[in-house]
Image 1 (cartoon, one colour):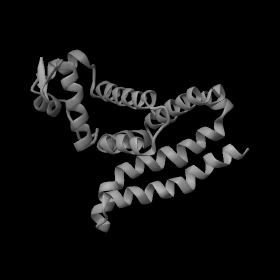
Image 2 (cartoon, helix red, strand yellow):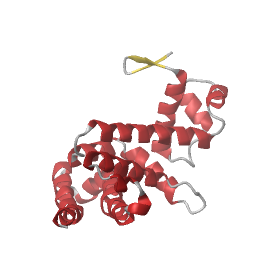
Image 3 (cartoon, helix red, strand yellow):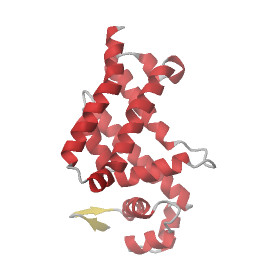
Image 4 (cartoon, helix red, strand yellow):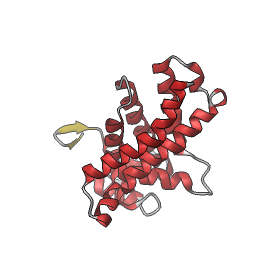
Length: 196
């Protein structure tokens, strides 16, 4: 068993965590199984024992990311904007990989759509509105959630640090400005739903 931050983990988990770091640092296309094996301190054959290909390894890392996201949703009674942004911020490097892989024209996978599926399932549970969990019954709401909440939140997490460096801005002030703008746009949509 390998040890990470004082706890023992399996070699498979070590490979997954290492792959996430390498993918986050270099992007999927510029990462290699050799690099992952070297950084994890395992033979490359062990990676191939657990995962048939680099793509399968990426799929599993993404799947684990969405499990973390789903856990965030299931442990919250209401989705606190700050906690949500904190999760995105902690995973911003890997979010870039997900976004880049999702927008590739030749790739039929749309990883980012999983976010809206999970979110609408969560909202369906907490509101008791079963229609929200089905796109065909609530497609306008799905579109609004994706394009006015998820996409801005993900892009904010991806660009936050660069924005602060470029404009010499305090991260806390930027986050407050973002949440204010978010409340004026996406929040306005939610308020209009309550008025209907």
